[in-house]
Image (cartoon, rainbow, N blue to C red):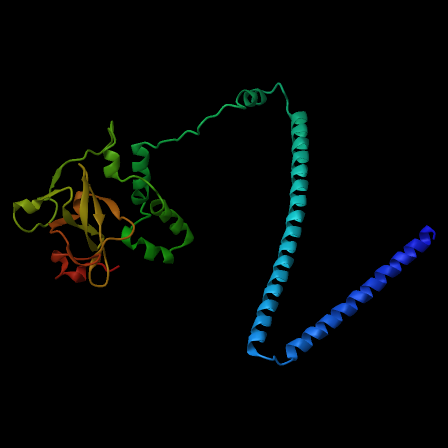
Amino acid sequence: MNAREHRQKRKQWKENSKVYRNKKAIAHRNLQRILDDTPPLSPISVVQQIREDVAARNRRQMRKRRAILYAKIVTLEKRMKNAVKLSKKYKKRYLRVKTQKTDPEAPATKVNALLKNVMYEPGHVQKTFMHRLRRRLYPLSFGYFQQHQSNRFTKRRNKSPQKSMKLDIVNDNHQLSLASCSRIQGHTGLFKENDTIDLENVGSTVGSDSDKIATIGDYVLMKWGTAKYPGEVLSVFEDGLMVRCMKQGLKFWRWPNIKDEQLYSWEDVIQKIKTPKLVKRGNYIITELENSTSDVKTE
């Protein structure tokens, strides 16, 4: 037989084998259907037959899934090799074009060549105390922040976008407090931290003479507009003091989640108060404000 006859005969073999396999598959399915529909002779034999069928089916499914995954692995490996080749190709092209466009006599080119293999750490710019103080007092001096810090989040929803952006100067600044800045070694700023302050000429006081002296860690009642806020003295300066204020809930006072530390002047200090009494978890009672809740602004 010549080559043409060989090809025709081979084609006939393929078609005949395909028909034969289809017939065998149909016969096997019919036989399996008959076996499944035939009632068993005994319960034991049927359980054993089901177990064998399930195990064989699981093995076939596992082999099929494994073959699919292996085929995917081979395809992905080919793609990865092609991607690596293309990356090397384009990298060489980029370096070639960059070398052609770069002037070897330019100062920047010479500096880059000198610093090519030099390892260095990026520097950190540390802000001075006066810079932090100016950033902290800037919104207060221009009247952008007329409400109390503990009340700013509820009020900011009703403000225009321009005013809201200005309030972010105080809301988003991650700066040290004045008390922390004043303890920096070598600091010679505007304020000096003292140990005590005399409240005799500041506002109305109650109790004995010892109530007229407030030290760091004591509690005082501060005035902000028409509202009163209790707080803890953090630092004392010549022109004012740093106080961490509380906020009022429905019945009790609480410490806010975001620390409300403000710099107050002497005119804002009303009186020295007793240590807040803990009622339950996170809730305190201010003895001096129990009978004057109408004067206290509710958050």
